[in-house]
Length: 162
Ligand code: S3P
Image 1 (cartoon, rainbow, N blue to C red):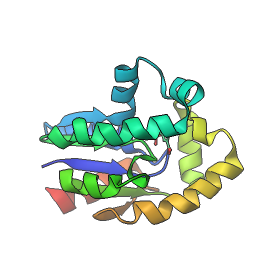
Image 2 (tube, helix red, strand yellow; image 1 turned 30 degrees about the vertical axis):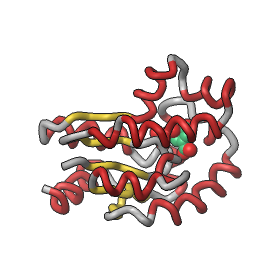
Image 3 (cartoon, helix red, strand yellow; image 1 turned 180 degrees about the vertical axis):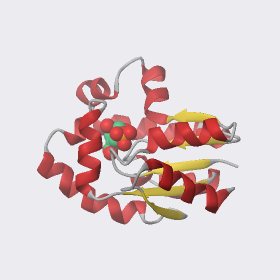
Image 4 (cartoon, rainbow, N blue to C red; image 1 turned 90 degrees about the vertical axis):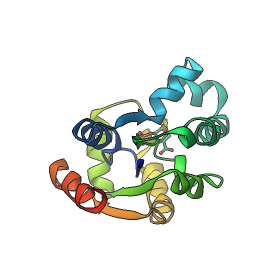
């Protein structure tokens, strides 16, 4: 079984994927991290030097060439990954897709704490993007409330999938 976490920047995908993978002896996969390694550039550099379209192509190929071969993985996706091309449908073939649903303010608070995110530089634009993305994420197999303490979110995912 594979578990694939989707949701907006700052929804907690990486943190929660890491915890679940450890607890259940599954492999942890962070698509942004692996793409950075593969390209030898940070996500910010990819956006700056090659542009967003290039990044989306890489994400699409990453699903087909890498994620399709995952077995017993908990996958933290980049926030936009399921929302381009046929990616959501392809992800759903690989495993259970779980949408970590937060409100915008929660995502913003968390996103500010960690890594540099090119699409979160302008708050107004990020809020618009958030609204559009909700429609895409809602096509996941499951939706969990991720505004809460992460323990509660994890419990809910475990009840559904284990
Ligand atoms: C993006 C989210 C980021 C990263 C890139 C684009 C997006 O991942 O893939 O900056 O389009 O929402 P996180 O959701 O892990 O921040």
